[in-house]
Image (cartoon, rainbow, N blue to C red):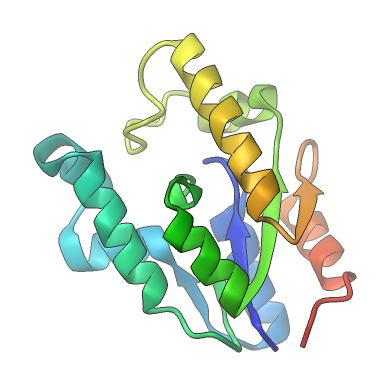
Length: 165
């Protein structure tokens, strides 16, 4: 089975669904954000001390460490900001966009201080969401709407798809 890459805005359920898929399919789960944390420290600290560009370099490095088959990979919300990342995922696996409305994401995230790009004014969040939504759509092989769905229902929906081997 080709690697499944889960992409989408923060708060769409990528990590939770990725872990559930891993359990159901009996294959490893990797989370590029957690890989960055394990290697370089907290993401908020990287943003604060070294900037977003440094984080994006670390993120791309971690993505390249993921296997081409037999794995579920949850990616950070900004993984699609770099064309090289999108090309890597499209070349090496199946890209599934977990999509949620801004209303749903706001409800899920609240005022999460561990998400550096979530702070700030609502208009800035909307701009980021709209810009990335286009990138997710272009990158994905398929899109799953996650609004008003529990993680198990999203996982079951993905498992019901005809995924490439």
